[in-house]
Amino acid sequence: MSMIKKEEIDRKINVLLEELGFEKCILDDNKIYRYHQEYYKFTFLNKFQAYVIECALTLEEAEKNRFEDGDLYPISLQEKFIDTLRSDLLHYYIS
Image (cartoon, rainbow, N blue to C red; front, top):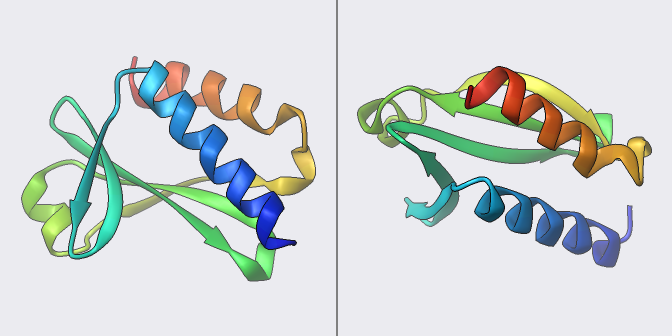
């Protein structure tokens, strides 16, 4: 994956999360997101060419890097990537 493409996807993820009311936070030099009292991060996995959503139910869990792996979002979804992520966030994570 080219760096430009990954940066564009990262930007789209940031825009989506802001639209949905997630708050950006920095924890141990890592960008994470808070939604109510839960913490989320999106990690790109080179091996799978996909992002994984990870969730910690409390700040304490997030500080200890105890995030549970969630769904995998392959970049091969291309144009459907953000729509799929939006739908899953609304239905499974923040409902």
